[in-house]
Amino acid sequence: MSIYQRGENFYVDFRFKGQRIRECIGPSQKSAEKVIAKRKTEIAENKYLDIRKELAPVKFHDFAKEYLQWAKSNKKPSTYSRDIYIMRMFDKEFKEKTIQEITTWQIEKWKSKRKEGLQAGSVNRELALLKHIFSMALKWRKLKENPAKEVKQFKGETKRVRYLMPFEIQKLISNCGDLLDGYLKSIVTIAVHTGMRKGELLGLEWDRVNFEQGIISLFDTKNHERRDIPMNETVKAVLRAMGRKGNLIFPNKNGRQIDGVPFYFAFHEALTKSGITDFRVHDLRHSFASNLVMAGEDLNTIRELLGHKRMEMTLRYAHLSPRHKTRAVNVLDRVMSQISPQEEKVIQLRP
Image (cartoon, rainbow, N blue to C red; front, side, top):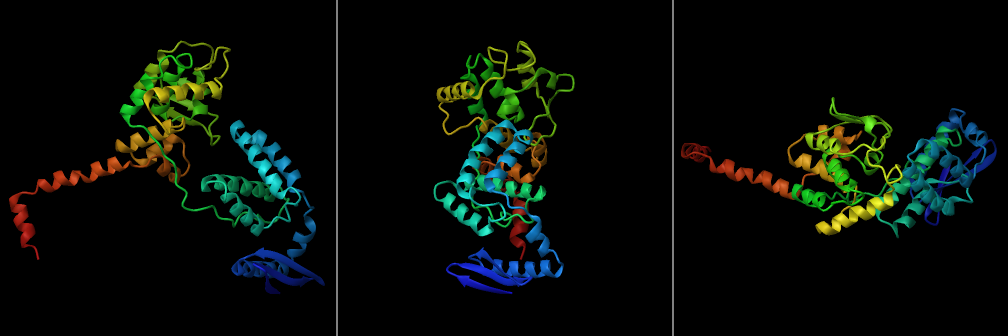
């Protein structure tokens, strides 16, 4: 077995059962060395023959259809719609190739090309979907290895976290007025007191609200797991003051769930009246988490309230504002000023 370079790419070259095998690895000699070591092990354990013969070629275009059919039944509608949009771009890039032909280097080239017109975060989200597509191909025995597994996401992405301080929240709520048939004020209030997502709020039903136990139970969450949200007195008062019209708490005039378009128009009208800029609906969730952190609540409790599986996500949402940090270090002014003359003499006498 040998490695050679042609242009900017490295290739592995070896013979198997009298047949010459050449594989393009990409611009990394180290990756080529890893592939050589892997092929030696596969051949020694009599597994390389299985890789060459078992897998029937599957066009990426055809497998994408299978994946989307699975996604339609297993992902939220909004996520499924986003997958369809991204898949059209994948199809242009890989349509003529089989999933077995797509290499790690080709995915790296695609990633670099996408970075020219998109922010790192957008490319990372597309890459995450591509990784999952190949992961499912592996699970469904269409592949023996995931070519996207070793492709790293772009580093240094700035996590956008925009939140409102309490006085800004009160200003926004007061400017909701009768917008969205009077529901917007209640929706915004509940959002900043529970951290619920927009979809969870607009789809909220009365039979999920338990006033006796003081909780709202969510079943159709982003993580597809049940989440019980405690209600404070503000949330209880808002819900009790609302008239019940069917099981949906926030129905439109036809008794169905409020559509996203009229909701966004109403929300942005309230933002404009409040003089609040660069603020999205999801930032109400940021506001919930950030204000809890600034009030001194521990991060693990906030993680549970938000329904995060990993603490890393909570650190993104529940950051500490610079003003809060400044207020914290200013405590030292008070502490240091309380040193007594006797203590000061002791400090001066220390070597």
